[in-house]
Image: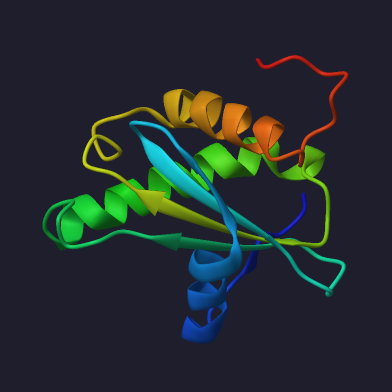
Length: 117
């Protein structure tokens, strides 16, 4: 199983917000920015608007699990930032995965031949 490479530096997140392309859905916002590392890095954020610490942690877990299913198909060499929204903690990871898959297809990070699950 491939390990998800985390994005940890604030500077990298800020660059993704500023220069990256965003895709919005009711459950998750995705920022996509090409990097020169040859590996896809993933960052997950939740604002305090989402809820208390327990709720925000659940939102991050749901997003991480949703991405885990798509990870092998995603093109390498990009920074991805997933931002939780208000409805994310109450959603199942499969719902989030469907939204995420549409966003990554629109951004051109998933192969075109495959159709969404």
